[in-house]
Each structure stands twice: as structure tokens, then as C-alpha cells.
Image 1 (cartoon, one colour):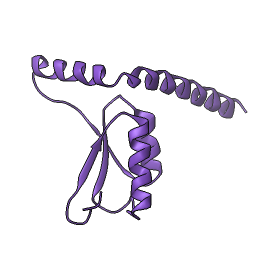
Image 2 (cartoon, one colour):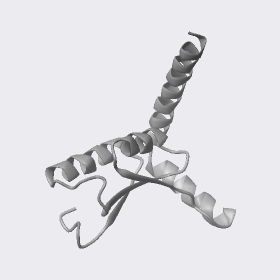
Image 3 (spheres, one colour):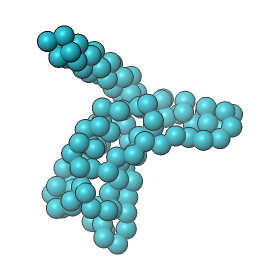
Length: 111
């Protein structure tokens, strides 16, 4: 992050603590999240709550989709799932957030 302006970086992680650290370091170094140079990325369908929060905060958040023959993509996706043990905890958190939003919308629509 110290060379922003001369380079760009993509922080590709599903780990909330890593994202929070990157955001904190950006603030400490006065890096505007809307400027070019720092991007966040997660696999499509994973850590959506993090991508949404980053986007709402003005950070550049992207979703990526591995493309290619299943024989190449599936081992990659399995490795990502194994490396990200916290993904399952994140999936449970996302399910809870989805249910809360559905309940909120039902309440709003029925009111």
C-alpha cells in the first residue's frame, strides 16, 4: 500500500480480518477508497456480505468467476474452500443476514 500511485493492488480474500486490516491500513495512509489503486475481490457467491459492505463504503469490490474446463476449475475451487475454513462460518453468517432481511422486507411489505 505504500507504493499506491505507482502501482495497483488487488486484495483477493474472503477473510474478514484481512479485509478489515487492509481498510485500516488504507485509512492510516490516507488512501481514498474511491481512488484507483486498491481493489478487493472475492469469488462469486462467496463472502457476498463483505463485498456489499466494501461497496457501500466506497471501496472498489469485484466478484470473479473462474472460467475453463471443469477439470481445471474444480480443483481450484476446492483449494479455495479448503484454504478458507472461515468461509463456512461466513456462509452461516450470510444465511442469518438473508433471513433477517427477508423478515424485514416481509414486515415492511405487510405494514
